[in-house]
Amino acid sequence: MTVRGSLRLPRNGALNVREDWSERFAETPDVLKSAWREQTVVPVLEIEIGGGEFVTMAGPCSVETEFQLLATANHLRRAGARILRGGAFKPRSSPYAFQGLGLEGLKMLARAREESGLAIVTEVISEDDVPMVAEYADILQIGSRSMENYSLLEAAARSGRPILLKRGMVATIADLLRSAQCILDHGNPHVILCERGIRTFETALRNTFDAAAIALLKEISHLPVIADPSHAAGRRELVPALARIAVAAGADGLLVEVHPHPDKAWSDGRQSLDFAGFDEMMAALDPWIALRGSELLRREAAGARLMEEVR
Ligand code: PEP
Ligand code: MN
Image (cartoon, helix red, strand yellow):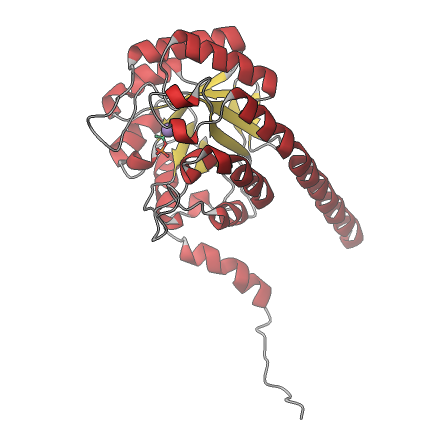
């Protein structure tokens, strides 16, 4: 038996599929792709985040000592990282845990930049600290626990520094985009989105890594997207696998915790890679990054051919 004439597609069906996302995220129009909005490329020293190069940001969870930080920075630079991370202000799950070295930590980060040439990303947790952190950092990190602190977002936006916006652990994609829109609204276009795992019913790991969010954000937003496999997994042995997944999902880069002696780290040691682990992860990522690069080139070539035919 044949069924005829039952499937009627609207003439502008393809358009509707695309429009669906702009309706769904209508509250945050400026973070969405559009015909006139090009991919946002965030310049940081001589690095371009979102410009095609896969950018790795790495370093300890917390800045602890000058020796720890400089040893890490020097190793990371040789191993291919471009940006050094390290928290001088730590928003901990417990108020009794180590809260960071503050200004002393910022000064150590600046020294590490001088010695290694790596750019610095570090978290700011209080509105009052924004001018001080912005003086030392190349990128301000807004942490998961602060994603919806709009007065902090506004102060960070006004500093003019690029902003690494981490997804809240219970934030939806719409919530993340709303915070990004808020930064854009305050005159700062240089926002980098970061997927770092969310809380779900699954408790085997620290968080649930939402790889689909990376794919979706790359599909709908012009902002660069980076992945943090360390906070997502909470276990160093899973970090390389999640990093590969992030590459495959289209992330523009990674944020990874690395420590010279993870078992002695003052915070997040369980999820931090040691130097050898970082080297191994980077080597294992290379073919995946290369594969993605050649896919992009293939797609660009196909697009160019199509344009030729249209002309
Ligand atoms: C961190 O990067 O060390 C951190 C505290 O991350 P999050 O805000 O994602 O928990
Ligand atoms: Mn951490």
